[in-house]
Length: 509
Image (tube, rainbow, N blue to C red):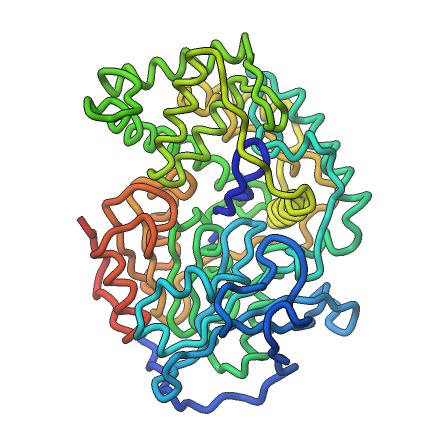
């Protein structure tokens, strides 16, 4: 899951999810549109507004529209909310196959600008064949926006990610969870209770219908893989070609207590694995940011530095809060592990902290954006599945996790806002199964901090004969057209353009 807002502000990574289906012909008939979308230039009214991913669109071909959907699908005739949608039409109408929905990560991410941005990285044959569709999921501005009115200090990543205190205590985390939950209950209104993965999946089906498509293709990334998997489970016959990229572990005990915790738990092995890659890089003799002579020394030096900063924090102007302590260093490490291109940024921070002087943090996004993304992330994770409320349970889990995974110091087993959430989930999580058409392609980097390969393999197992998985020998979060490799990119592009999918799971070395 990834929506990156760096340096002491926010990463709403917050928190997931072979009978062949005959391909649709380009001229396949479609049912009448329900609530047809009224497209207009982005920024002119429809689908425009402030917030992360405003739909302003750098490409003049991008259009925007607003779709109204039920706030509560249990009351379809009740209050409605807005979903902002964008598109760039297929570039070769005679070859048009349908619509390719770009499902963002997060929770808290938006794909409203993606038809103009990442969508333009798609091969020409794919752009010829599909209308590229983006949207701001419910709660994300400029769709009807959520806001919990959190304290400024609670927007810090070291609060949103539940780092325990230096001695491993979770007492402060439980206090923070209750405070944030109370703020969401007080300020979030009815909307905050109706933001979940299942709601997102049902909204996608409303978007499909409004587009006039009998079936829809999708490219879901990070948390978007869970939305895509849930959509394919709820509406299997309305799916065409589905690509799930950087895949979340969808498993849980389905007693409403484990599902979203599986995402957080994945950071422990994810960081350990990625640190091996970082330490190898940071020990290279010709590296201008070399940290030590050996990878083992890079690791031991990092752990000592984090412990020193736990005892003796440094001023960090512009950060939230304005101190670099052990928690902030560990969170910066996690942030920079999403993309190996950010390894130098982490090395420079470590080198500066060793010298006792840290340069100012980069400017944070506007607080309104942080509030919006934090509210959507909290609501989605907490409404998807219930979390334990026992302090003793978290204390036990954190103590064990700190020993097994020293780099993350117990954070992946700790209590998030959901430990204090006042509204229990209204429905059980959707169980991902092998029932449905065989039209899903998973693509997954071997080394991924946020969605580790171990979790992706669980999604692959759950989907059974419906899916084929491409494992890419590469490092970083987001595989296709980003941190993957040419072999993986070719395989995914071929599937989207032609429907040709490997006959079995493949490894792209």
